[in-house]
Structures are given as structure tokens and as C-alpha cells.
Image (cartoon, rainbow, N blue to C red):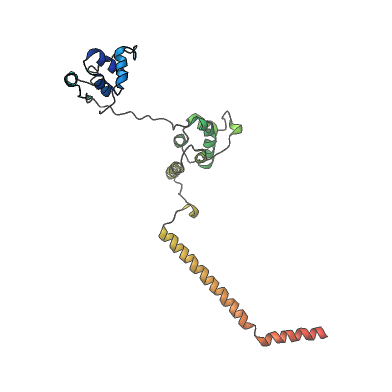
Length: 240
């Protein structure tokens, strides 16, 4: 079937009352159990449901019903719709679980404080709130302003870090703020990491070599004659 059947139980009621189709055929077409269709025929199931004619709503043809009545093993096929209507995509604020809705003002306060370049529409997308709530938090006129604590929306689970970074990058680009990323948060490729580690190792080796050379030079400067003369002078001073 290209699309689901409209009102399958009401359609089954009409087919039971107005056709000679078998229970199995009606059950297969209406996606019901054969015993349920038998209950409809006996009046035990769907007694208060009015039958719906599938021919009138364009989901079944009279010829298709005649084929099914002539062959008990034939399975009815749903007619293709004459007009295809695209599913309407619902546009609205992000859905937030009930358990986390009380944390949205805290997340708004964090965003307003740490990313003032974000527009209200971006905060609405991230947190799933309204413009009036954002304005009340920004102006410190929220009914619970005294108890609000700035909290990262990513930590609260209201949005992902990728979504937050994307919105911040867009806002910075629109505001003309240079996108400066600290080196500590930049991921390096394997080649760059290996080259940097090799350079550090060479630098450490050269520094260690220079230190060893200085220690060797100092050791050479202290010869035996100077040591004995120093000791002799110390002994003379002690005798005096």
C-alpha cells in the first residue's frame, strides 16, 4: 500500500455489510485480525461505529471489490491517491522534556551572559523558549530572577555542543567578531601531532646536551692542583 487506509475499522464495517468478501480479505485490507472482522459481523465489535464507503473516498474501486468477490484468495489493493499532499512540517520551538523545562531560564541566563552576540531567535532554537522569557531574563524582570543561576545548556541537556558552537559561530560572523579558537581546543591531525612531538623531543635533547656540556666543562675546570691549593690554604688559616 502506498498510503495507510483511512478509518480501517469503519471501512471494515462497510465491507462486511455491503460486500461478499471473506473475513480474511477484509482483515488483510483493513490491517485487522480475522477474528476481529468476524466480531464486527456478529455485532460484538464496533457496534457503535458507522461504516465508511472506501469507494467514495477514493481508496478502493468497485472493480477491485468484484475481483475479490470472484476469487477468495485475491487480496484487495489500495487505490493510488489522485492528489498527493506533502506532509506539513511542524515549525515551532524545540521540544523540551517536562523535567528540564524549569532549567530553561538558567540556560538563558548563561547564554545571555557568556554569548551576548546571540540573537533571540538563536536562543529560542537552542533552548526551546519564547522571546518574552528571554527578555525577562535579560532585563532581570523574570518572576524567579532572584533564584536563577547561569548554567550551561549543554550540561542541562537542552542542546548539544555542536548546535551551540554552530549558533555562536553564526552570531560571531554576523557581528564581525573574529573567530579565535584557543590551541588547546583544536584537534590536530596525526601528522601534525607527530611533527610537534618530534620537534619537542629534539628541543629537549639539545637542551639536555647543552647542560651536559656545561657540567663537563665545569668538571674540567676543577683540576687536582687547584683543589689541593685550596685545601692547603684552609689548613693554614686553621693553624693561625
